[in-house]
Length: 447
Ligand code: ACO
Image 1 (cartoon, rainbow, N blue to C red):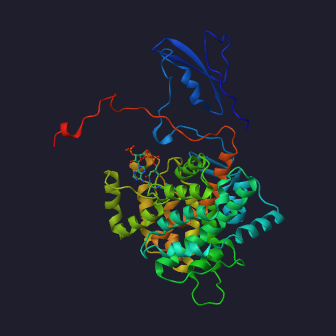
Image 2 (image 1 turned 135 degrees about the horizontal axis):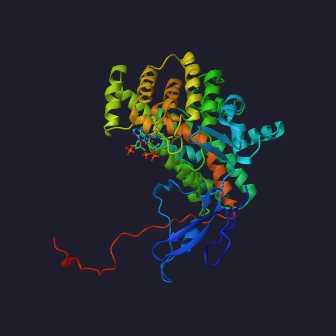
């Protein structure tokens, strides 16, 4: 993918031969014609700026609230074709990675662009697993939260607090420092998450066990009781591994965009990751899996599904876990997750909410409301059920998402920092407020 050269924009009076990969625009206000270069299916927004009414005019801009049709970067990390339901990391289909890879190997791939050699994987695993411990003062920091604090709130603030523990992380253009912060972030996320969980139960923290896999160690820190050595259930450990692979990156979504935005001011990666976690927390993004479970509990029985769907169609409710900004087809991750759910339920026993979820999906996929809007189950529709069966409380669901997504966030962050075309992110606005007016003293403003 070659960088797009800044597109020369010329009025057609200036350029005689009209190039093929261009767009001709006519400004009906002035009658002038412009030619804008098209590259990789985009035009440069800045090329529009030369379309002016007169010399004093600022120039034309594009208006795109929520960035529904704006490309903010060039990326080589994740490819999505929402219409065809395709998701690939660095060219590798998600289905193959979910079947054959591990989370740490996938994280390496996402970050460095290639699958690691055996030696590279060994080094990478060693580095990440040797950065899983957190400073003892972080434990005290966690102790300051109430027992009923939402673990996502604890995670966001604790990750932000890490920036105060690693001041060298500010040196974002130092490759060695960046590498180290990446090991730390991927290594420490499960520890902070598990400690937040244990804190909410009033239970002693369990320290990392470097002999276990990434997800095995996480389960150990969450669930170990009096055993001398925690042995994770292999089905649950592998299922969590696959769920983490599926959530590892998803190109320019709300939280990745936040990571890039905050990182574009050259803030340290802990602050940027905390901001990305905050973006993920919302119910329209990573908080959706929590909302799906709450919705299924609210529905409560198979017989009440049609009534709920009726309320969704009336605009009173949302069918959480359905719909996606990019996928206008079945989310490929949801297909894999449905399969894992059955494997996990064999170990943990059936989750009674599963039948309600299946019924919601069955009815929704037949209803014109959902079909015409291309609303299909997304990644979150079934993950909550699996997490619940694994023993996680609902409030931990977005935390699990955040752990997995850290690989994607740091990859997006580093790609942004090293991209010579990127600058501090700074959108424009259309000002619709008052014209200039004079200050009114308070005595003259009425009651
Ligand atoms: N239930 C009911 N109606 C829906 C849903 C839903 N889950 N999702 C979209 N719609 C409707 C909208 O009301 C709208 O209808 P209208 O045209 O009559 O106004 C139409 O479908 C298009 O929806 P938009 O809001 O324009 O779609 P957008 O791309 O902005 O939103 C989003 C995508 C936020 C994911 C949305 O589908 C949603 O809120 N889903 C539920 C929350 C959820 O599951 N989020 C997880 C997303 S995956 C992730 O972040 C990991």
